[in-house]
Image (cartoon, rainbow, N blue to C red; front, side, top):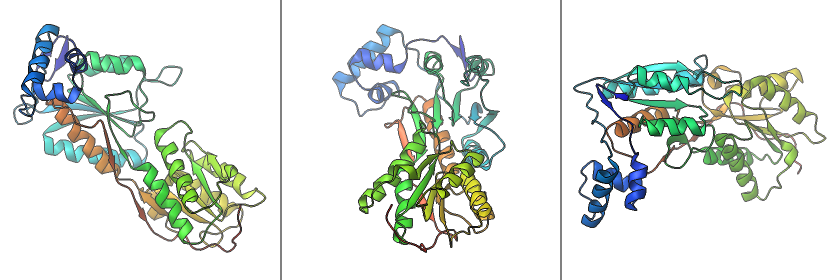
Length: 351
């Protein structure tokens, strides 16, 4: 049995199973379940018959005005300004929806570093109606468990590409990588490096792909040695910047795929007696408070973290109400915030 708000329902077939049985899409099946009229009569008949045949149990419709709901927010950690921005967005949207939020700083981990299913069992024990996962990496069995128990969830900036049908919210990372690189190109830089995050993480790959695309559009040959991965770790970014400075032709500018890593880059440049932006232009990504605090203030790509979190909460409320989004992926736009860490290069020569 699974507790859903004040009701208990037996785990049954998912809406995806019903849709497959009826030969329709999941959003179409959702429309029938929720009494929407924009469905053809024959399609409605097939879905209704599949619902009855499979014994699909409709989730009680969420009504915040009657019973305040409880949702879980699972963040990567609570000691970063990133998580603070996410929490701020969720809190504001939850207040508007009449929801209470339980915050967990990461999932219980196995030896391999993945979340244990035992944490998910606690979800039903405390009656959570839905979950927001931020920077989480779930196993296939955990996705299956959530689907089987019909607990709606939304991924905020998922680490890996989610399975089909999983709802997620992120930023336009590819466009952000393009914007950061085009800004440096417009200043006259040609030797532009990138300090990226994890090689297997969605957002990192997208930002590097945007960087490469902008270089190609400008007719500048991509130099493989200018791409360094630092795993979003400030100390590793420090080492990667030192490696770039030791190249025969070091870059004149660097696109750093997170503001936290940019702190490590600044440190490496200071150790070598180099100044920003006179000797090296630096562009970050995120627009965290650190970007304004460091000197010189960091030019960076703003990622709307609070807006992403609020959007995810609103999508979760819809799913708690039985209404599946038409699209499983929502991307919010990024934009360049120009400050004092970029200028034209002193030297110009191709890689």
